Image (cartoon, rainbow, N blue to C red; front, side, top):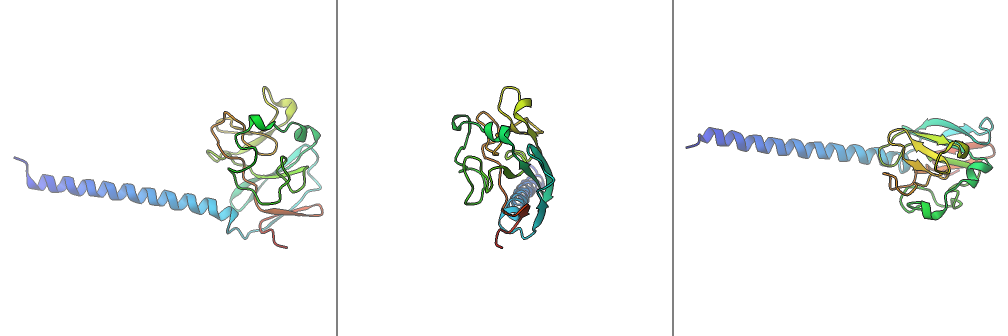
Length: 186
């Protein structure tokens, strides 16, 4: 015959474990929602970037609203290396945040300039630019530092990668030779 105190302790332990698991899930969901929503919907921080020092084929890495942002001055080689639609998971940009009015397929307000969140869409790893002449077995673009996930020079995820969404494009606008990250209202 079991001790009734033993059964009560087990019931309490199970209830405590379930409450702890529920609390953990709630904390994780709130952190993820706050992180993703802060950048694109409520971000009031603006950052002005002088584009003059970024030469064709070069990239500038910066921080904005707690995220890594890449500003790439694409040259003819990078634009010419854009992947054909059949090698892309989402060529039309339906899975990945981007503002309206982007010129397709370059995904940019100004074709030579690409502004993307420089973090992979599956694990949030930092990205590096790979020039077409340095890419072995693919046409170049971006590669993440964790698993080697690849995106083309417009930030579109290539087929066969762990990521399923294109790189996010933050709200921005151009004024002359300056890029303004953040609110797009004048």
